[in-house]
Length: 412
Image (cartoon, rainbow, N blue to C red; front, side, top):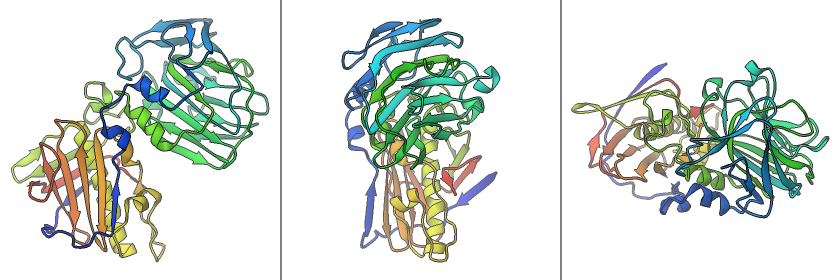
């Protein structure tokens, strides 16, 4: 699919009365970037097994872990920014990690692990167990099943699932976080910092099983094949902002970490897209880093949704509406944002609305990235500007053409 946006009239006057301002800059990420391990510890897990060796102690608390069967300590590990980072390499036949952690969670729980599959469960013909406290009739388990779908079990048979693209699974690191709150009957799956599935399936409280990694001691034969590390367990449900902050503390989206920054390649970070992004100014093609292309994709998605709001809802929509899904009086469908811009570690985004008018900024968090500014004066036409050296305004260079080939950051 190919679509090209051509800019309309320039919007030169300042918007007189600002009705709504939504800032998406996370305070914790505005300061200096903290170490990944410190980011996890700051959220107070009850167990944190980095798996730097085949046996050792939890990073917090008094529990320990020990490799069983064919487990090797290998490197390099997940892209968390720690020099010499190791991981547990499991052979898929008899390997798993046993811990002395048992129970410890009541009505709420969260679990985290970085995983790197050596092959697809559909090819191996079995489940790949990631982590949990297996208990017949009261599960707390995360596993990839033979359909290659990640499933989170919280009671007898009840589960939440997420289906990543199989092409992104093998030999690629991903951060999995799951959360459960039995009091509010809510549970969620996060994939690389972004919430990708949630429901009100609830589950039972009071888990008492032993916490294991890479295989279940209750449900045999579910041997994980590949790498696992940075495994953590909480006795509370992490907030979305905490999950995104933990992921942002890694180096998964940093330049030079591989496919995430290669133009036209799927990302290993929160934005797994193969989309091709092209922009032009009055001098011709503008060369963009992949981080900058992601910012263009976010602002273009905002532009698309705002056009729908202007035409069908008769007003510019706030960022909250763009995330939740705008509602039009005539029930005409308007798409929503596929991702929450807060999880972008490279840019902070803001949206200002006033009646039918809106303006959106993508401001770089790091030096060396361009800033972008999209603006509409109230009609389904807009102008776009960029500043190679930082935040952009309408006095900077105007983008004359913008095109995206492939997927987008909007979803029905």
